Image (tube, rainbow, N blue to C red):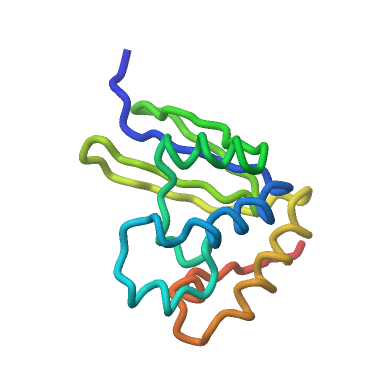
Length: 136
């Protein structure tokens, strides 16, 4: 048995509006500078919040949603569908390799995500992550 390398949480696409509302409502409870709070553009795409177990329980109580949680071990892959917010915690040092792809079933969700990113300020870090489509 390999030891755990990562643990994560993956939210369903349909839960994104509720997750956004939770993060906005409780943003002052996360540890970051007050300067960030003023600069917050998009609670998910800013990638500045990490939901600990307490916040996950409150999210479930207040909005009736909870993420699918997982442990990833050496040699395992995790596939997260397009448009599903996720968070990863590395309890040990590790090399993170990520491969992004869009399956035909998720093209519409990917386009919706691209549209959200397009609305972000020009210097937003999410704009650096670009998605390219190759149509056959």
